[in-house]
Image (cartoon, rainbow, N blue to C red; front, side, top):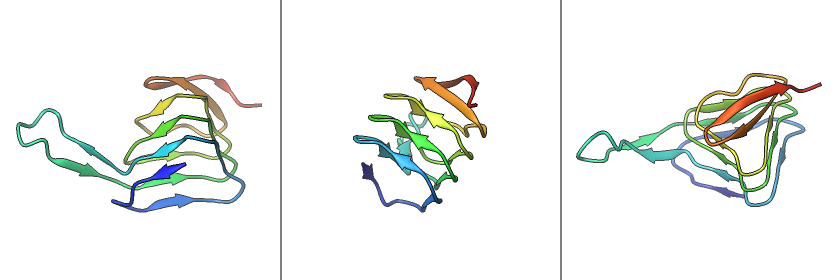
Length: 96
């Protein structure tokens, strides 16, 4: 796992962060000519699972018992008790 340290990363209990996952608190504003730095915290709540080679971006909360599937990219908050997949990650079903 790789974490940049531009902002806080909060990891609650019983979280699984699989191999090669990236938690990135920084990005750049491609809409501005100055390419300004955007930073924001990441919060991974209890029981969440971040799949191998997945990426969680700045200002994202992965809510309770949510799965981010292998090689998926979370660019916005993920609902609780859900499974997300893709780039950008979309909800594919509830997590039983």
